Picture 1 (tube, helix red, strand yellow):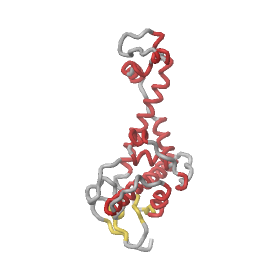
Picture 2: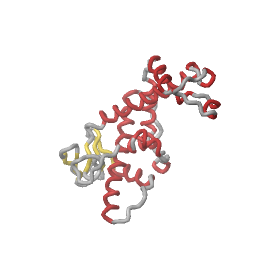
Picture 3: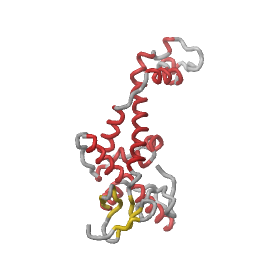
Picture 4: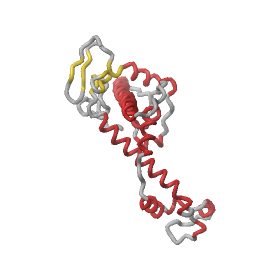
Length: 224
C-alpha cells in the first residue's frame, strides 16, 4: 500500500491515496471490487432530481460495500472452517435478487447470498449444523393447519381451522421431513445473521463506504 490510512471514529478509516473501500482485520478490501459489483447490478428506478440522485448513488455504494465485505468475511470463515474453496465471484454474472428474498432476508443479506459462493457455502454449513427437535416439528404441523390440507380439500374450500376429516389433511409422517427441512433452513439463516453481525463488528470503512444505516453520516438510513 502506498498511501496512508487514518483510523477514525465509528469504525471508519480515511484513505489518502489508496483505492480502499474497507479494512477487514487490517487488510484492505479494494474499492475496485465494489465498483465491479455496482457495474453488474442495475440501479433501481432513476431519481429525477440531481440532489436525490447523488444521495441515492452514495447510499447504493455503501450498500454494495456491505455486500462485498460480507463476501470477504465469508471467504475467510470458509477457510477457517476448512470448507472446500468456493468458486470465485463473477461480477458480470450476479444473479437477480427476488423481492421475496429481500422481504425475508433484507436487501444486503439477499444480495450477499446471490453474489457470493462463499456466503452460500457458509450458510449451507450452518444449516447442516442445526438440530431441530421433534417437538418443534410437531408443533409447527399443529399450528399451521392451513398449510397441510390436501389439494382436493383446498379445491372444496375446507376450513382448516374447523374439524377436518383425516383424508383431507396431509398426514404428519408425510409432512414431517418437509417441515424439518424448512425449520432447519430458518435456523441456519438466523445463525448466518448472527455470524455476519459478529464478523463485521471490527470492519473499518473508508469515507463514502460506511454502512447505509450508520448514523454518523448525514445520508444514513436503516437498510438491511
